[in-house]
Length: 85
Image (cartoon, rainbow, N blue to C red; front, side, top):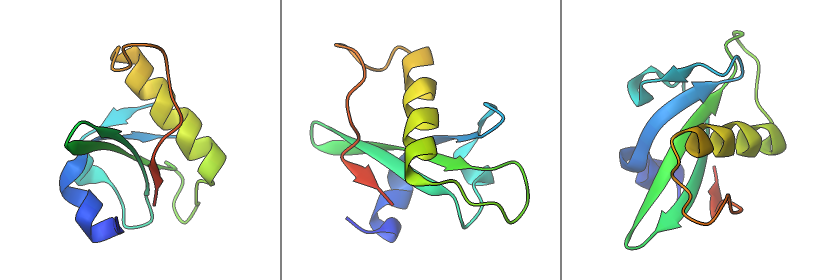
């Protein structure tokens, strides 16, 4: 899956200040972290609240996982993502 294919499946965003945001607020440099959920994936867009600052893979995974855990999305505890774009 590439970034353009993933964009329709972004459910929400989170920045590194732990603010949950609408997916439409995601900047172009947001990392997309996704899990395959049955037939459709779910993605969380992750970015820094500081301009021109990139989030690395490990931080993006941690922030996306924490946001989904807060929403009690994982039935059996958090799992590793299937996609990092």
